[in-house]
Amino acid sequence: MAELLRFERVVKTYRIGSVEVEALRGVDLSTDAGEFVAVMGPSGSGKSTLVNIVACLDTPTRGRYLLAGEDVTRLEDDRLAAIRNRRIGLVFQGFNLLSDATALQNVELPLIYAGRRRGRIDRAMDALRAVGVADRATHLPAELSGGQQQRVAIARALVNEPDILLADEPTGNLDSVSSGEVLRLLEGLHGAGKTIVLITHDPDVAGHASRIIRIRDGLVTQAGPSAPREAAGANRAASGAESGIR
Ligand SMILES: Nc1ncnc2c1ncn2[C@@H]1O[C@H](COP(=O)(O)OP(=O)(O)O)[C@@H](O)[C@H]1O
Ligand SMILES: [Mg+2]
Image (cartoon, rainbow, N blue to C red; front, side, top):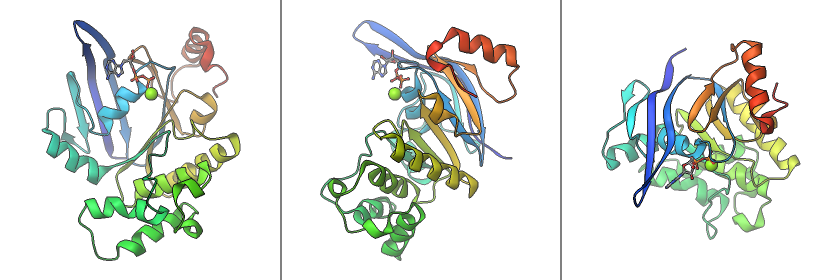
């Protein structure tokens, strides 16, 4: 399979006044097209920092980030935005829908940003249908359940046909029934060939992915299904909060 994203020794340092926080301390990882990867780690481990870099919302302090073979480590903001719009579909914990726009209008937005006029409504409706909420097209977000809102957000993320669907704690605000629906939807999208990177602190959520990358204190501690059992056990013992992972 073709490699879609690659981190080489990625370091991200935040500076608050004279204090430096090393959120990522030299992360290596790579993901192939068509994979469903979960990035798992406790709160504060660097997951959102990693998401921001993968999504081209931020750049590494040191190291390299290659997206579809292109080195995007040091690009200017406008070039990064163009790559983000073309390659990345983002889904957040809080849905981030426009509250005064209908489900359909929310999904049309990325098409408007991309300058796509022709067939816009049809494409947006197709995306809503693909996530099972076409019958709610004219509803405002407040008229939808949390699970329906997140499905609309996934339709919005997918409508421009990005290379990667990147979801940061997408079930964090959902009850267990809605979480299950959203996770089954992601599994279905993966089955249809979509590359998915799912960020979570929840082992049950990560269990839906086909590969788990573990991050802890800004470092990847385990990056694949092929790690020896002993290493997996030691990793579990070191982090009680992550026990129970398959
Ligand atoms: N904008 C920021 N400025 C300063 N420190 C930050 C910023 N964003 C994150 N951090 C710090 O970086 C570390 C990793 O944070 P984050 O990537 O949000 O972790 P996670 O998403 O796993 O909870 C934490 O110590 C956090 O406090
Ligand atoms: Mg986070």
